[in-house]
Structure formats: C-alpha cells, structure tokens
Image (cartoon, rainbow, N blue to C red; front, side, top):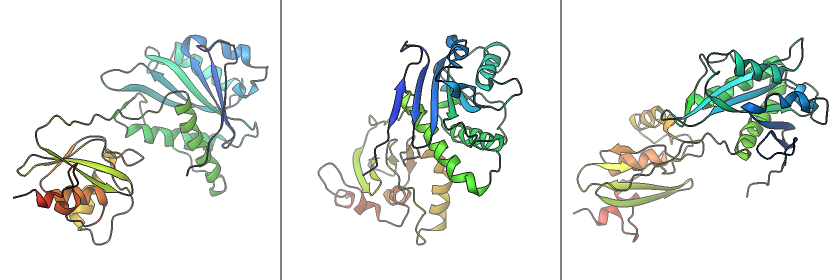
Length: 292
C-alpha cells in the first residue's frame, strides 16, 4: 500500500479564485497557482509570510486547451541582482515574450521551501530540462518552448534531493488540477469480439475482427519492466520503438493493430506467451476455444 502524502493548501489573499499556495513537506517545496491577471499580487504577498516568492524557482505557463492539446511552457526563474525572480519573469512573459504573450492564462510556480538554496542554477536547469522532456513526449500537451532548455549536470550528492523535488512538482501540479495526462479514448464500437488479458500491471483489452486483425485498445495496461531474455529480438525492438505510447503507469495511449493474438500478448507482457491461451472473453472462454 502506498504511503499517504500530505499537502497544506491555502489562499494567501483570501480569494479561492486568486493565488493559491500548496506546501508539500516531504520534498520541502511550495507551489503557487497564479492566475495571469493576479501577477501584481505577488508584490503584495512578498514581505509577509510568503517570502518564498522571492526565491528562485521553476514555473509552467498553462493555456486553455486547443485542438493541438493543452498549451504549456516550462521555464526557470533564476536568481537576479535586482531580486524578485518569480515576479520579474512572469511579468516579462505577460508583457514582452512573443512566444508566450498571447495565450497563457495561469502560471504554476515551484520553489524551495527551506530558503537554504538547495537548488542552485545547475539544479534549476536540471529540473527545467526534466519537465520539458517529460512534456515533449505527452500527446495531450502542446509544448510552446522554442528549443529544449539545456540541462544542468548536478553533483551526484544532490541528485536524490532534485529527484524528490521533481516528484513533488508533479504531485503539486496534480493537486492544483493539472496532471498533463492524455485523455484516454478507448474505442469499442468497431466490429469484432472483445477479449481481455491480465498481467501484474492490470488488464489489457483486445478486439478480434474474426479474421487477421487484432486491435489492442487504448487504456490497456502494458507491463513496462525490461523484456524477458527469451523474447525474440524483433518483438523487443517493436516494444521499445513504441515505448512512447505508454503512460508512466503503463497505460496505452492509443489503439495498436496486430496480425496475431500472440504478437499482441507479447507486446502486453514483455515475454513469450501464446495469445490464443492468454486472451479470454467476458465469460472466461479462451480465444483458442473460440477459433474454429
């Protein structure tokens, strides 16, 4: 069983539609949701109990969903001689940055809560790049960065801290209602018989057209562990070439068509398996007992 995670949620200005603050103690970070029309309130909050807004941090700019996905820009607010890295950076995006000036509505900001500067400029670059790379492969997102930000190379002594912070950023974003997850659309209206296969990762769903087409449905759970050494090289290559179709939890993002039930089963399991025995219908009858 997963351990519980605790967050402290508040509205610094007293307005639920305004700036919101989320503290995640495990990673010692604080996150802010800042509506674009509330940027000036950052200055009002600084100097109060929210001095963390004067610290450097990572931020994401989010826009309203379009046909191309959810617009997203990932950036970092590094230390500045004039201070106020968060306020100044968001103000620049609001007024002068051509790439972001017209479309974003909300900023999510993530800051070190310890005020100990655990995250230096190298760490900021590392986190910025990690978030960019994660977003780049997500078909639900319309990434608006012009180029991939250069990643820093932190010392191994701080990598565990940065990885905890990276996890905390993703969790806090979800607390604010932004998961960045692709919306799975499981097509079940096509003609054919439906079958299910189960692994430790969960259930996979298949539609057989009665001839030579086996469609593995979006939403199926794929075993993401390393492939068994007994799996043929061609099957290993196909799985790895399509690894970008898995969500982080192993969920398949879109339908995939196979020419045999065994090929579909091996893709799901990552090891050699006989498809006619692996796939069963809703009554528990195996595919091999239905094929005539």
